[in-house]
Amino acid sequence: MLLLFASACRQDMHDQPKVQPLEASRFYEDGRASRPLVAGTIARGHLREDTKFYTGMAGGKEIAEVPFPVTEKVLERGRDRFNIFCTPCHDHLGNGLGMVVRRGFRRPPSFHSDRMRELPVGHFYDVITSGFGAMQDYSAQIEPKDRWAIAAYVRTLQLSQYARLADLPAGIRDLIPAADASKKGGAKKGDSRK
Image 1 (tube, rainbow, N blue to C red):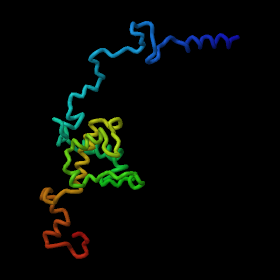
Image 2 (image 1 turned 120 degrees about the horizontal axis):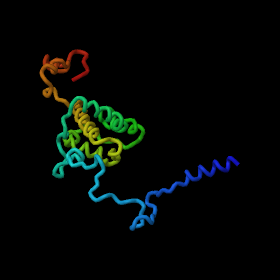
Image 3 (image 1 turned 120 degrees about the vertical axis):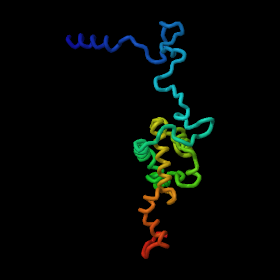
Image 4 (image 1 turned 90 degrees about the vertical axis):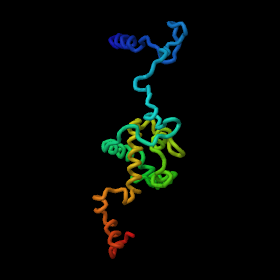
């Protein structure tokens, strides 16, 4: 008998009056339970007035500079996000020889080709946002500021693999053994670098 009373109480709580999304309703004139948004409603955080920041474009062209100051902290964040999302295909140096490529996936272009070094930084942001070729878009996985951090880090990778000796400050230039060898008329005996 007690079981009969207990099940009756639960049934009332279980069958509460509610409306499921897109269900019909006689309460409103239009017959819909789901209410339309008020005209002009914008979800918080989705206004996106800064088109350079959110698209990487200005005047229909990819922008050449990151739209905020690139600090060491930004580059560290870019390296962190690059290592998580990009290295499976692009590898840690950006050569396009990541682990999935070694396992048969299509090879992406190396970031170190002349063509890739000449592309504006907005191009890398756009590719992360929209995808390109076999690469899927990462707009759902990577926030816009992190996409810019990755694009800035790609520029750092490019510089790390293609820096000319003349681009370095004199104090650093003197610390490089190849520079010393070239000043003395060639490589040292046994040195395999040319």
